[in-house]
Image 1 (cartoon, rainbow, N blue to C red):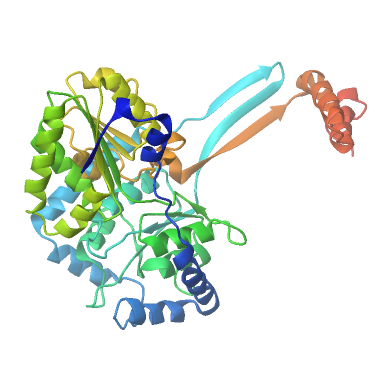
Image 2: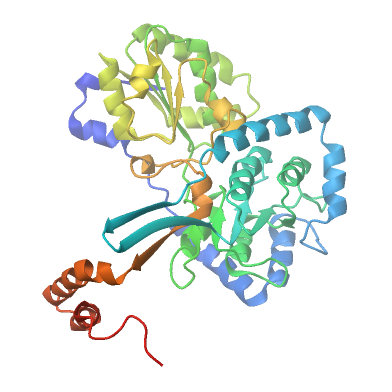
Length: 437
């Protein structure tokens, strides 16, 4: 990994260092639009054709049957099933606490305002299964959707060459009581859930990670004329570790590699006050990466990554807040004190024992997180991501005396006479609140 000394960098160099390489969809946008248009025009037939073309599988039915789900549950080892159940319990326990409550106030006498939360009606979950079947992502998306009480959960995942879906994904979906499961992958799955087909219902909001085609499809469907809500358009995985001289270099290297193996475009960063730790981490990375099956991917990611040496943890945190990482690990002696000053991060791991991997799978927090610096203004997926706030107001005759003149004057100041008249008619009280028969 490249190394820098923070105090020797100019502001422009620091800005350049934290800036992500833009994820340019231009080279796949045209092909993705064609897929969306094809699915829109031809529905299920287009999906079956793409399964033959991209997945090399001939499907008769894109819906996963109850028999397939049962066979999947039987084929998954008892150890994996138990781990999925235990992880699900932790995720559910934490996410149940996130259910929002209604608030109400009387802003002035006779004017009552309240905010209530409603579940999104139908949500679509996309679960990748290319080089790795992401059963954990099923838990991270389906559990908060169920807690939010969404009326319908639709799940789509790529088919295997055997004609079914990844058993681990089906097993996790069954645990989460998801019944509408479809064997469709890639941009065509996003298009199918976003637009609807003969078999797959149209959803109100799309969730889930994927490759560049999936990301491009989500980006396109979030715009006119479709205007489908999406959770986020995720970029490459990120981890920034802040470490002092007490940090365990072996653990840090393992955590950096855990995120580097997501993809060649992943970025992992170590910011440390200790040159000794930096040197040991470099050595551990070189040793541990050779043990990985995905070492070629991890090595490419490391070439895209770097180490920053700095004089103080305060400077390290300033850099981290500027970078706004997806994952932030605080491998320092007084980690809680430093955590209080974190402003921009998707998920924070406090202390060396708190491996990022635990958040990926089993601690209870969600692993669907903002990337590419968007953690500066957005955050982790929550139960509220599957809900929407609805505002209510009730104005009594007493309240009219307060709000009607304010509204009328402000409307006229904006040149909106119809607004002003609607307020003024009520202000004068020349007409009763309820028409007489």
